[in-house]
Image (cartoon, rainbow, N blue to C red; front, side, top):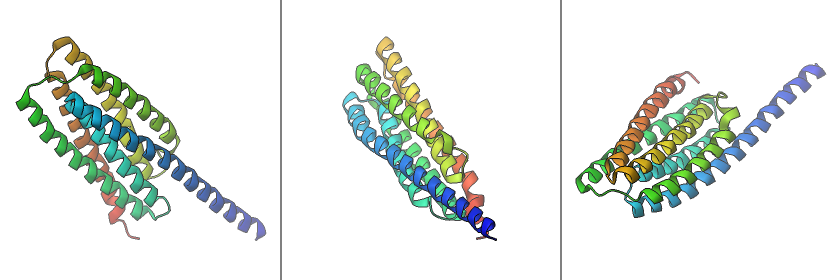
Length: 208
């Protein structure tokens, strides 16, 4: 009886320790993304880069995502599924916003500053690789952490795209590399949103 009680208490303490560790990691990556959103959005606006601004909005979306993930940590699986569903909706909304910005860039036809794109794209890549490393061990723990990890993985892909766009703009003096990469980031958002929504809906609908 005592052994059973101790084993149960040990498992509960282990579960709580994991939650504390997750919360600490999520708070760290939230801070990184919030800071990078301000820096990258400002640089994107100055540079006139659709890809850089799209990437910065992704940072803002991730900050919101991590905040939702922290809120869901001590909740039931159904709450976690709801948080994941909210993330999917955020990602979907940002994809639509990026598409609208891309249309505006096509109309203007002005090439962005490739130097600013390269500098801030590189900083954003380093920041997101740090976040990805911190989240790696939690990626398969539950639907909430899995969707959080997917957001960071997509960020790294987007950052590489921004750097590629910067190179293309520098070589061609054309806005099209920036526009194309911005469009690809939007497609990535939409694909990720559909995946997160599809996997979280069954969890939300499951009986309590």
